Every structure is written in C-alpha cells, then in structure tokens.
View 1: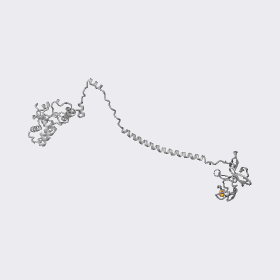
View 2: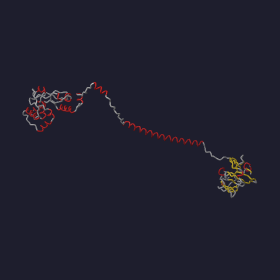
View 3: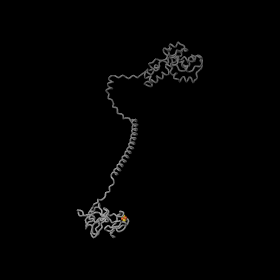
View 4: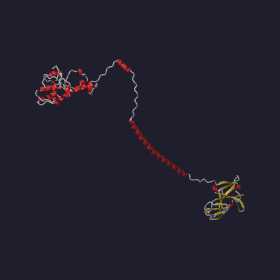
Length: 371
Ligand code: FES
C-alpha cells in the first residue's frame, strides 16, 4: 500500500465497477464527462490504489460520512456517479490512517471525525510543500489557490489565524528612520460646508422678514408722525388767528407845493384810499383829504377830471370836488380824514379820525390845512 500510483478517472471508475462485481451498468458518456469535469475528480489524482477498499480520509466538519453511497450500491441498483466517487475516495491511500483502514471492508467505513473549521484552511498560511501528502477536498484546494494568488488574508477568519508579521527593525535602522527629515505636507484647502449654506439661507429668510416688518413699522410711524405734525400746525393756526397787515393810519403825502390849487391828487388811492384835494371851500383855499368810500354801499368812486366830479360805478352816485353828493343814491357827502402839517413841513394824513359834513365836522381845523 505504500506504493502509490496516480489513476485517471476512467481507471477509478473501472476499479469501482470491478469491486462491485456485476453492479453492472456501464456509465453513460454524460456521466463520464461529468466525472472528468468535476473538481472532485481533479482533486483526487492520488486515488489510484486499486487494492482493498480503504476508509475515507478525514473530512472537514459538516462532511457526511461515505456509508450512505456504499449502502446504496449494496442495494443492487445502478450506482450513481456520486457513489462511484465516494467509493474511489475510500480506496485512495491517506498516510497512516489509510494503512489502518485498509484492513477494514468498504461496507463498514469509519465515519470521518469532525474537524474544526479553523483547521480546514491550513493551506492558506503554510506552504503546500511542507505538508505531508493527504487527501484534499475541494475547499482545501480552493483555499490553497487563493493563498497563492492573494498575499493577504482572504477573510476575517484567515486574518485572525494568520496575521502577517512585520519585519523587525534593527536599532541603526530605527535611528535612521527617526533622523530622516520628514517631508512637509501641504495644507489642504478647506472644504465648503453645505450646512453653513443652509444656515445662510435661514438667515436670509429671517433678514427678509425683519426688513419687511421693519418697513411696515417705519411706514406706520411715518404716517403717525405726519398726522401729529398736521394736528400741531392746525392747533397753532387756531391759537394765532389772521392779522391783516394794514398800512399805518398816519402817513405823509408831501409838501403843500406838491398840491396846486384846484388839483385832485389820485396817486394815494390805491395805497391809502385817500384823495388829496386843493380847492376853495366857502371862500377859503384849503387842502383836505377825502375818504374814497361811497356813502351809499361802500364802493370806490372814480374822479372824472373832465366832468370835475366823483362818480360811483356801482349805482351812479355823483359827488362834487369838495365831496358833497349831488346825484344818485348816496345819502350824504364823502367823509374827510384828519390832516396837518408835520414837523418836517410835509402834510400828514391821519386815517384814525374822520369828519362828516352833515355833522358840521368839516369846520374842525383838523379836517383841513389852509394854503
Ligand atoms: Fe356808490 Fe351805490 S355804492 S352809488
């Protein structure tokens, strides 16, 4: 049994058929191709020993014992490809265990002892050449292939089992590494923060609301201020009523020489409402000031130089040069203002005093100035 020989799949199938002796049925070509293509056929090149049936090699945990396919073959039916492969595995050498199991019949194969899961992947951490020859299942072959193709651990379980040791550094190397100048790292630009953008949008909305409310309040306060100002102006207007700016009651009209005899001066009518007349009254040459108010209803008569009379345009009343009424509805003569010679020699008219002819007041020396 120590001598091993590699067998092809066809030889394995032939040996299995020979063991069954009349089991008889020749596998179909499809079955043969399936066997040749299956990874299980490839992983058992060492199952070439065609001697006595041997117990199967220990399998990983979870693998089913090979007794079931053997029992199925013993039932006399046509063995399936799976049964044939199981029987072939039982016949392959497997070190000492195979030597011990070679004396036992195939009908009572010893079930494989369950193996811990961590032991199913030794090929990932140890080189395949250091291992003794053992029967390899598909999982072991795949683990070996992954370990050869990828230097690092395949999974977390592999990493826990076989961590990669770091190469120890000597003291000079550590000193040199510590003394080596470090390259200055450039500063990375600050990344924009979208959260701030959202905060800025919120601040914009709050600012808009504040401005809108502030505008409404500003408009309201402005309207209230304008209303208060107008009320104050109206109150002041009520407290200070209109005062007509009237001309002074006394005014100077000039010297006597400026008023020739028989002349009616009309240049003071518009400003003072006075005619200054130099005329003979009852045999005496006088200068007097006539009031320009019609004694009928208060209109202002006009001096008609051609007709030598005052004519009221309202109702047609007429007055002589001395002011006595002679036509129209006027009930009485025109009135005189007080007149005198001022200190400077000019004639001064005082409108605060009037003199009426029907009352005999024209005889008052204050109502005329003699020439
Ligand atoms: Fe002068 Fe009537 S007001 S005539």
